Length: 146
Image (cartoon, rainbow, N blue to C red):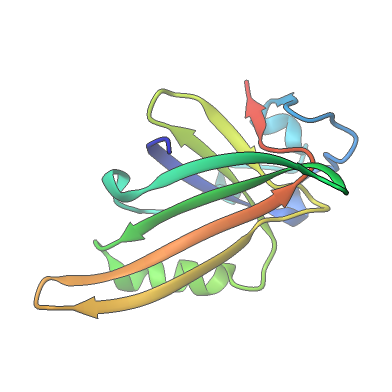
């Protein structure tokens, strides 16, 4: 598991076709689309010390595929992020993830967007948080952002 510095959502309607790219391709964030603007990029606020990124490759009778998982927790400004999370349920977005070391990945494509799920939990007197997970099973894997 690698630590995450930043997670940014990008609306799928603003993203170009990435299906022609081979696995492990490198892309520029703004080469994803000519229509993409800074205003389209929404950052998810989360607790970096409680967020993880993993990409696991496997091979079966259908060929090789990766399972990408981004998970974490949100505590501060919980109600602000409830709207963000609800707006992303059932809508298609891809995500740019920046790891602690500075490496950036694009997770998802126009044809294969990841899914976002979240849960709201309250326990004891001090734990009031959202847990979220962004998942994608793909033959492309994550795209490296250059």
